[in-house]
Length: 144
Image (cartoon, rainbow, N blue to C red; front, side, top):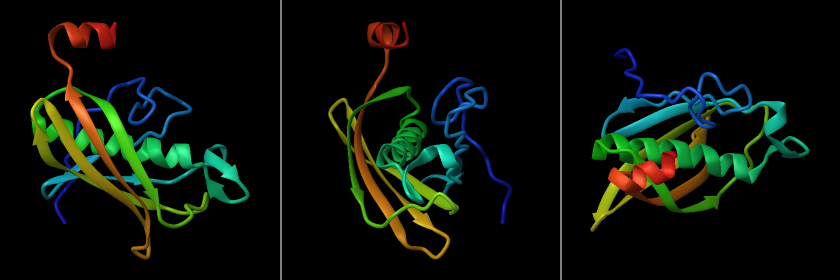
């Protein structure tokens, strides 16, 4: 297996930031026509019992899908919609792989999809999102 080529991270980002102590600390790497990342939930990601909160699962998908589409588009992007289908419980004690890729362009809107699988290959969740490039005035407004 070749060495992983990690994509850019933003220090304070909830999804990929190394300096965000409560963040997800995802480190997406290039693989095939998209990106992958590993996610190991912590106890504070729990929603109830031994299950990870659905909002955390959605955030994991949002981060990796956005990153995959951004790399493929060579652009900074903002999420405008995200749809998540939850297929199986994500347990706090597990280790998971996230895979995502860009799938289409619709005018100025980019689309991507991704999924989270456990170590046995069981699909935990699938997501689809739409993203817009942050250029010029929109970037200034968004990044403030």
